[in-house]
Image 1 (cartoon, rainbow, N blue to C red):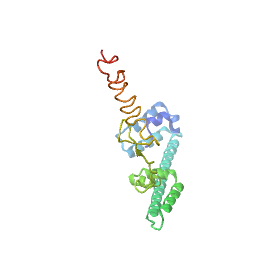
Image 2: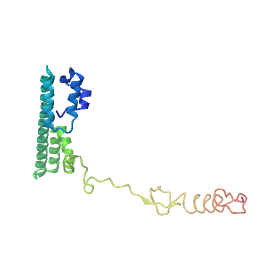
Image 3: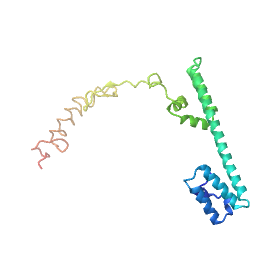
Image 4: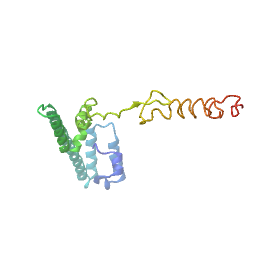
Length: 222
């Protein structure tokens, strides 16, 4: 009875309804859709309805109910088996974690072997039982300790190199340059050909690059 419904009737018609007249189907639907009936009352009325149809309807109706009961029993059996397997899995995990004679490497390998031998459905259910279950199942996938684990190789040494942009930054050295070409008197230094005080800089005669003096030929007279 619990599996009767409008969707089931429209998408799949059981054998006992295939040869029923329209008024018989209407009576059947009235019983199924009546939410004021208890389950026991509905089952009794459906049984009486099948009896009233005569012919093979009663037998087909009984066969249908028996098939539905068998499906439910099979589902219950599978659920009990699954719960038992999950319980056994957690017991095995607990035993491995409590075995103080194992090294960490041995414990990890035994856990991996247990996971490999366990049905995926059991592992999936174990992962969904809560944070504790997820922690146990996923432990073999955790990374190393952020403090004690493998560390990155040391960074290559840097020496201080003075540049015209930041005299104190740490940057890779240029062998034997001694600050060239950015030293004080070099071509790009403050006093060099392209330096701040020369013709392409702030006070130079070619002022469009720097802030030229007001009265120079190319100064900003506009």
